[in-house]
Image (cartoon, rainbow, N blue to C red; front, side, top):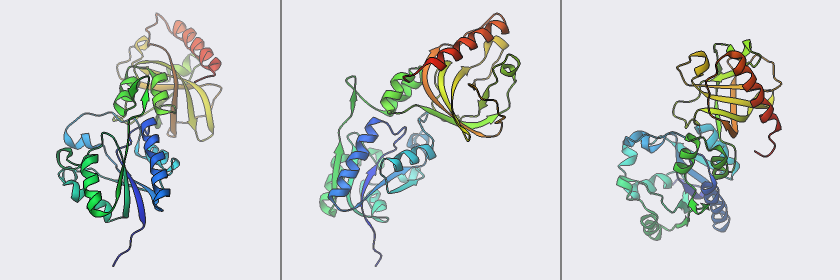
Length: 295
């Protein structure tokens, strides 16, 4: 007969790995220690709404999310595809999936967690199953910031209206976009401020059009930067671009991975009468970003 490692398992999508998720991971550590089991996470490699017909913009990529969860103590992490078959499972059958991998000693879930067919697997349902099958269920209450629950939806809305300051507080880290540096029109280079454009995942939540103080992470290190998100109306642009000027950086990084860590929205996107006027504004943006110390 197969034997499985004793585990306490945290359940959820964990998009963004925000303050609420951190509270859940803290509870996971406590329960695992109490029950002499390993702390494990069971999550999905795609968002359930992508299968169920909803529209969602993600706050983190799979690699970033899983790295954050491991940094918060997940010793084992199972990230599986969410399918229509998964959505139609009974709560009992969903628990069977967990029991096929671990000797489940406990579950840790958020207050609004659901699983299985039409969300039948509530914390109360899981507790009833646990009472029969010999595992505990610990429910983490909402974490509040400014009187409102921290949630992926709230963060997504903050990001998309450009309120990076609030988004970062809710995340307890800087919101990050990553991608490969791709070719651009090199207009920035012509006016003395070369930019790196990234091909960000179209499923990600993109901050509102505007200019942001950022950090840019490349293989050679982390650099202060200024990022413009928008269509570049001064040069008759039409396509949305995410372009970043790395301050005091001169290497060619085309084709390389680049991560942008958002610090603060400095202004909206503007249309200028000339490239000289655009150049002067970028100079002021760079100066402001260099002086920024607390974001």
